[in-house]
Length: 76
Image 1 (cartoon, rainbow, N blue to C red):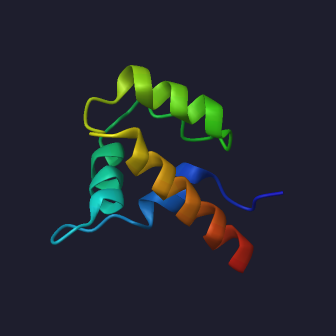
Image 2 (cartoon, one colour):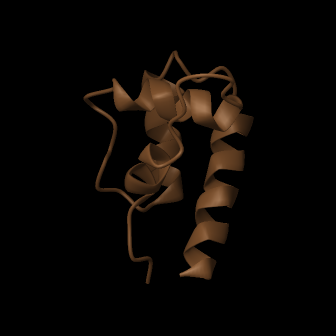
C-alpha cells in the first residue's frame, strides 16, 4: 500500500526555474483546483488529465511522472 498519494508526491517535484517536463507538470498541477488530489489510481488520474488538463502537453509526461512516483514509493 502506498504511503502517500500521487498529488502529494507531485507537489514535491515543483521547481520554479529550469524545470524538466515533470517539474513543469507539477508546477501547473499546483494551480489546478480540480485535480484528483486524493487519488492513487493511475486510470482515474489519467482520465482526469486527458479530459481536463490543457497544461499537460503530452500524456507521456504523466507516464514518466507516474514511473518516478512508483520508484519513490519503493524507496520508502
